[in-house]
Length: 372
Ligand SMILES: *Cc1c(COP(=O)(O)O)cnc(C)c1O
Image 1 (cartoon, rainbow, N blue to C red):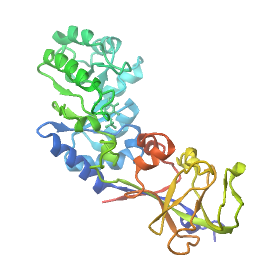
Image 2: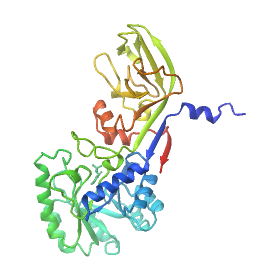
Image 3: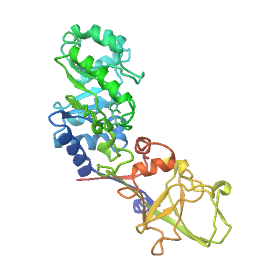
Image 4: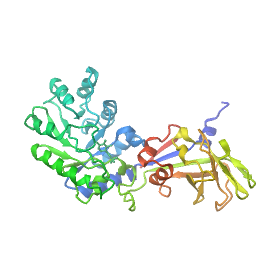
């Protein structure tokens, strides 16, 4: 008999449930919003941490045909998962090197050309013309993308370069009142007009909810597919995709004045009941969720009631004040850290970051389950 029966590992392990039905619903909802424009899916960074293989397969099954990744290696993997039907663009463009170009050819990946140097490499590669590619035009990010005038000068070569998409990216689409949105849309319209035969794409998740409806031919949502709110400050129109639950390892009672965790940053003001769970910052629970005497941090849903994190979040452990939980909690009981009630956006706000970072930091030690 094994000294460490696997059932024990299961009992103490946190579970991450990815609801592929909700993911597909989210994609369908966005696709319906922008029809007749097509809706792609951005699945970079392992589909924002939820699992690119499973997420992309589900989206392909729902009718999604166009996928965006950041790296050629992500594209190569996706090609193996999705087969020949999917169109796969690689956002980060070409980076000099034979191996890179070979990967585009071998896996039928379409580069998003993001600089004049990318364009030159592509045109010299022999792949241009037998292979699709997108042109990324910068309208304000100053990150990737050709300057507007550089792009306009390339318009006569669009066919020779094998271009099939012209795209740009919003700076502040989650802030609909920011005048930069209208300026970017106008600049992109000018470029788009010069590439009349090509499909055009501008909107990310929040861009799909801008009053200007900058849908063009193809939208590129990521975050909203995974349940993030594309309309911050207003109710979230998307369904939660990720649920994170962890079992309680131990409970204990402490008296007034006793502290919790490293450096004693939280002290009990009343006799308190505490529960320790076996996940911490190594699992993507931000350390910024610590609950101290001075400020409140993260929360967990315990028996349907929100209970606060107390003390510092440590590497593999977090302590929750369960004094106000409706029924006595016991080791083995599950608490919920992320889901429909405690949303990705909630957690991010409490940690002083964005939901994108919460999702893409989700740990590797969870037992992952894919529903539907
Ligand atoms: C990541 C990314 C997207 C998706 O953005 P979301 O805000 O997650 O919808 C779209 N386009 C580009 C160029 C990106 O880098």
